[in-house]
Length: 289
Length: 302
Image (cartoon, rainbow over all chains, first blue to last red; front, side, top):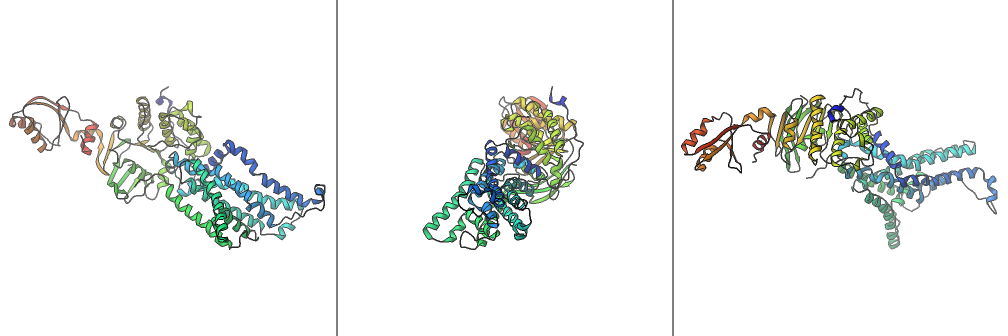
């Protein structure tokens, strides 16, 4: 059958006046992430810490039932803001978040640069803002599953296991802290991943950079601290800065004796830098001057 | 008029890409011609809102190119010159995804994606990942994504580049079908002149960012008459006098002299000059100028 005989019919539908024009980008981004073989393996494992911490909350309410597990005295497992802070800001979860970001974020822009697909996006009725929102929301989805969702679930389950609102009345601000911290850390990692993703067309290099800069910044802090014994070098570490701000948000002692505002400023500066680079790198057409 | 721009200026740094281009284009298939670096792709990118104008104004399908870019992009299809796709998607998902981004409802986009792929002849391989496609299939896929949302105007940037002769013919067939039977206006940017001559009735020629010529191909061809001559004798004086009369001369390998005469030129002049210069005219035919001649004339190359 020749091409012409197949016919072409005009579409008689109507375009939607979409309030979320970026949503298809997010949906496809999430879908493509779940198609990755290793991510299918990694994702359930990434939720293990949350399950362990949730079990801890359950055990804390049923310590008497678990007496047989302990030889001498029953340990005190206290569920308080420190417990939430431990889950959300400790190195293991941040490490898992970095790996999740590598899976879902490394190719978000680099693939579009490599395959010249930015012009396909921007030849559609999309603003640059929509493109960024769509891409960012992919990272937000996965990071919220690791931070916001478990944090709020812990809070709710604590009250359900306790059968009272005592915990809520003791720490009414805690859900807000969970939300604030999750938003902050997710926003940071989103900017961080998109920024690096926009720097190279090869997603493997991007993945190495995302991981390398995160780990490297920590190593750099250790080296400088060992040489100069100055805590201000903790500002060089991404992990250190997130933990500083996290501790402040959960009203806990900060891990380094410097003001947490400085760490917040460092994280904000990285986000601002990322934004400027993204704005410059992402456009419908590559301009060679 | 669906494309109307006036006094468009655009520069890449110090290099002027478009310098005061004004167009008022009719319906149908329009060819955008010019040598490399003439400003063809830049003009399309400006009309799509990828690039902001330095100066000038314009309307595409009645929408302002400065302030209503989203509306323009909703009703315009764009087939880029470069290979471009979204990896890890099959052709149906790819096409439907771009339909959704144009504002189509999800299910409608999927339905249209199947139809568009069927139309461009990719129905057999629509579930294959796009990165496994050959060059010709990618061209068809780019056309499918450009028509998935049923645009009123399509910009095709070098649609036949990198295709084998059969692939080229098939793409040109599709373009002609779209522009002649489907009531969709098509603007084709190309430097392959036979493609333009085959598919378009109207042409715009850009050269070094300037508008070199525009109009119906048939009428533009009439502006300069072409004569084919063979002469015997001392040609130098004869040729010099023709050039003085603003004729453009081309000599072929087999000794045939092609003379493009300016408007209003009286062909009796050939005989008068030949007599003056003591040259014999052995062959004298009024010939049909081609788009190639018109292009060469407009951009000033042989």
